[in-house]
Length: 184
Image 1 (cartoon, helix red, strand yellow):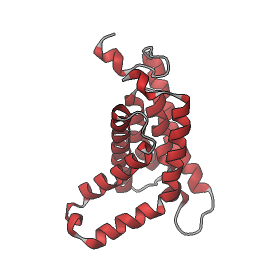
Image 2 (spheres, helix red, strand yellow):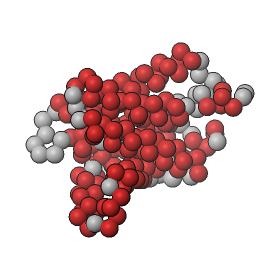
Image 3 (spheres, helix red, strand yellow):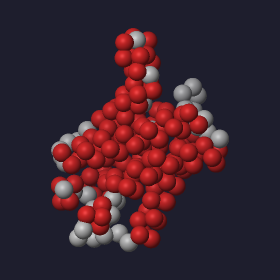
């Protein structure tokens, strides 16, 4: 198997995915990354939206990172916030760009953690925290020295605690269906 084929290997079977199948699973990942937050935002929630609490936009890229080649999770995370903006007008374009960046960092950190420590149980929550912090400070480098900015970051992370739990559970369930150490 050449180097290009190794990037498109189905991790569960270790066989290369055909280009049509790769395109199909990528499109499904984008669709689920788009649809899940939309469904969560349709549910009544006083105050803070459920999407900010439960982080549904991260679910499909997390699962894609478990079961498909990395490109599927990266494309799903990069594209879905912009699809959501184009279809619904939400999130606003700057927030879509931020979410896209967070999803890309999330998938990258998740895959790095999985490759380095396949049995580490907190990979998904840690990848989310890394994504939030990296993107937050990339957008606002001066925030590194501002206690107000740190307070805002901690407040947003506190709101997302239920979502961190959801990512942990989803990661553990997906991991029980797939063994990470086989393909690295």
